[in-house]
Image (cartoon, rainbow, N blue to C red; front, side, top):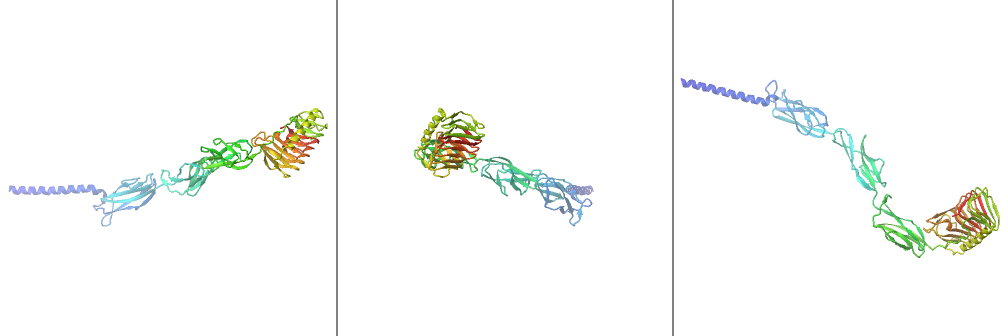
Length: 506
């Protein structure tokens, strides 16, 4: 009896234990599924559908509201509370709301929704915002003619790269640029701030270019040409330039040489000495640096005649044999001598700043010295026959030039002293001298060493700027507005001045 009762008790306890275990198991299962089961029934979620579907595109800082539909196996829609999360990428999402907010960095984000052990992903592409800035690189230093490929990068307000197709240009251009941003420096050196520009719509970026002189391209030797007497010397100089004609230092050593005769030169300094042979020596003086050289031509002429003695004539501006006449407005900044005549007309209104000697012993001696000077100059051997040609427009070195008839000068006549302050120029005319132009002296030529010797009359035309000593047998006429840096000396004739002549001793 006792054992039967005990057996019944044990069976009752076993049933209660099994019921308790079931209750515990159901309770634990509820911890994992209750949040995603239908809130009105115990039906289980079998599918999840996200809206909007994958993939999605959104700008930085933008938002998307995602929703999910859960269904049971029979297709019934269930009321659930899924969990939202970020799988990879940036941005944030409400774990219970599904509201996604993009970050400030462009890229790809994957979000997930999970319910009842089911997970569904959505891919979101976060794109850059609107273009805000353009950065142009590099900011180079280029030699003239140098090239550079520029690049332009667009970014939004958060620094994300924005694709652009810019228009390239240069402002205050130091060179040129093509449609792809390939730049070529010009020939002007300097710093060109913000000169290269890349533009997209109303947005642009710039870069600064510094253009520096390029390598040595040419050497220029001066003077060129140079005229020297036999044994004369000349210091030559060399200037280097790049391809844009900007002056650049000449890399040492700079070596001087003579390649076509004409004289000798100091290799280290460029000091040239003319040889004993006369002639034109083309491109004979050479300055060389590496493979680049420049050259100059040298013209070697005979040693000029000695300067003739003036005797008592240094202070005499006008010497006449008969009469000196000035119309009006003239100024003679020297002495006036007349012998054997005595007529001095027009002073005033013309002005004489020196002394007048009319048929006195001083004037007589002046005529005697003029005769010596004239005969000395006429007797010099002719170096260059100029015939009857007009020598205006010429550049002549020192020497003796002769014509059997008239010497004419129309326009500018340039006399080149070749660096010698004693270089002498003698022009011998068989008859008269006619000048309508200007005498220009260069390379240390001086008016006191220029002699115009003519066997008849000399006439200087209106407005001429004449230089040198005019030695005439008969008359000398200076027309209106003539300036004479020199002397008007005639042996037997008259000297006539027009309006507003100015005579000054050389």
